[in-house]
Length: 182
Ligand code: ZN
Image (cartoon, rainbow, N blue to C red):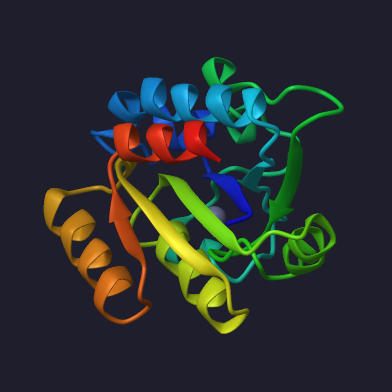
C-alpha cells in the first residue's frame, strides 16, 4: 500500500467560524496524531483547502465562505502544514480533485490509497471520495477524524462511502497502527 493522508478543509471558517460543524474541534487532535505519524513514516500529507473567488458557483448555496486571501480561509494553526514538506492544493468546489491537479500529484508520488480526514463528511469529504473512486484510488475514511453538521449527515455519508464507493471505515487508532507497520 502506498498511502497519502488528505486533510480536507480544516480551515478557520469551518472549525471555528460560520460554517463550523459541532464535532470539528474534536477531530483536530486525531488529525494531528495522524499527520505526525505520516511525517515520521515518510507518507505524503496533502491539504485540500477551499479558496473561493467571488463568483464561484457554490457561493449561491452557502454564501461567501473561505474567500481567497481572507484569514478565515487559512488552515487552523493546530494543523499547520510543514513548509517544503507537506502539499497544499486550493479548490473552488467540493471535490479536492476538481481543477487542483490532485490526480497528477498522486500519480507522481506513486500513491494508490487515500486516507481521508477533515470536514464535512457529507460535502467535501464525500465529493473527494467520489472522484477518488473514478480515479481508481483505494479509500480509507477515518471515521472519527471526519465531521459533519449533524450526526445524521455524518452517518449517511459514511454509509454511502462504504457501500457505494467501497471505502474502508477505520478509526484513528487503526490507521496509526497501519502506518506504523508500513
Ligand atoms: Zn466552498
